Image (spheres, rainbow, N blue to C red):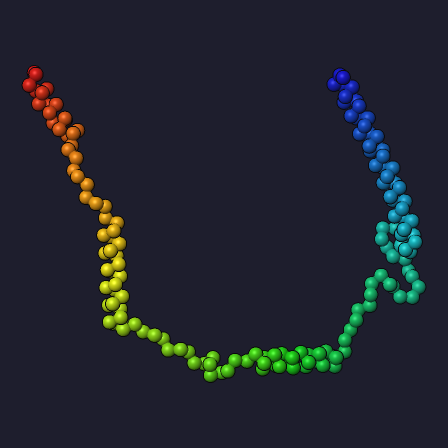
Length: 152
């Protein structure tokens, strides 16, 4: 199919889609207008005057000052009872356990034991002594210059 025909086909398809969506928009707008008329609204969401009270928003409920005071007193009493039931004895809370101190002899014993452990560790990590090998490269390099001087 030629490229020009494909563009025309796409263009006509898009035009038909636009017309379909516009028709759908008109149908939806008509439905919204009908529903607003049933609710007593007009235009863009303005409410029409109604008889009696407005049922769209519930009336705010208020509480008298004496009722608030009774609720607050009851809550304070609940907290007081809870704190009394879960209270810790004051003496146990106030006294702290004595801080333990390490004696000089104990510290010295720990130091010696640590040194002993590290010495054993390092002794175990030390590799066994290996037999020394003859340095071949060094012997060969040392002999080469002598032969060179002798040949000249």
